[in-house]
Amino acid sequence: MLTILLQLAGGTAFLYYGADFLVKGGVSIATRFGVSALVIGLTLVAFATSAPELVVSVQAALAGSSDISIGNVIGSNICNIALILGLSAVIAPLSVHSKVLRFDLPVMTAVTLAMAAIGLLLGGFNRLTGAVFFAGLLAYIAWNIRLEKRDGSGDAETEIREEVENSRKYPLWLAAAFVIGGAAALVLGGKFIVDGAVGLGRMAHLSEAVIGLTIVAVGTSLPELATSLVAAARGEQDIAVGNVVGSNLFNMLGIMGIAPMIRPVSAAGITPVDWGMLLVSTLLLVPFMHTGRKVVRREGAVLLALYCAYIAFLAVNA
Image (cartoon, rainbow, N blue to C red; front, side, top):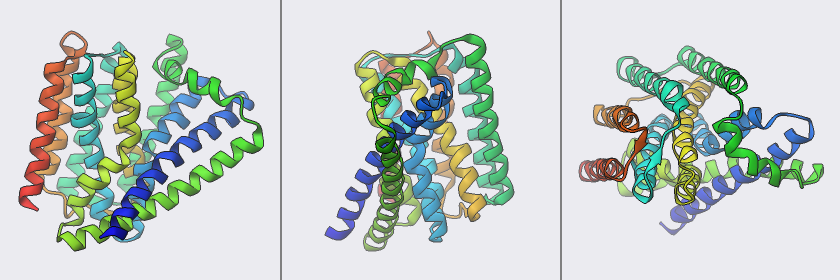
């Protein structure tokens, strides 16, 4: 048991710091070669917060643990909305940027509906559906870049201006070391998380799906948790909301695009309740964000209560 707990704790730490070093080094190298802050924000920074989920899901798929792979994505998205966004809104009401309402929220809702339909009707993701989702990710990034260039400095550039300025000070050799070390830490952390989760599931007689939906999902969502809570506490509400919406889109389009193309991912262990929780939490954001363009404390409390009820249901039925 101690070994399993050390694997989970160590894996979470490796994932968190690996993503941090990867983005610091990547941003530094990109700025040296003249890449704009806008493009960096929509690629490197956005990818880094979803890198833990990506690494864990790919490694779980390769290990034949499909339920952990897809459970991690579903659980992370539920955690991002119900726990992280809910907790952030309780700390301080979250204002919603018009672009999120106009573009990102509808896209996230549509992709969530498509993902649930594929999981329920097809029982999983094959290489074709993975390719379609990955193509959707590329289209989403391209369209975001087009919108930001047309409308001027927006969320993406505002969010990473400080990151870009801080990363310019690193010499090229150190930035490269950050990228290599961060990538290695992500791979190692992903292996620790998958091995620890499988071991814990066997010891506690829990299904891999439940482990993926809870322990693995929360562990890999730590970057989003830290970013959103700090942003909410500082009054940077646009970042807190945009971070969650963007991360959920990258989780679905990126991870469920890349992982199935490497190895088809079955959703056999994911129940209708899990898909229902994903859909309900996502659909609740539509009225919550449109009323006054804010997610207020009362609505945050509703999301938190929903998450607690879901975790309690999983625990009782485990």
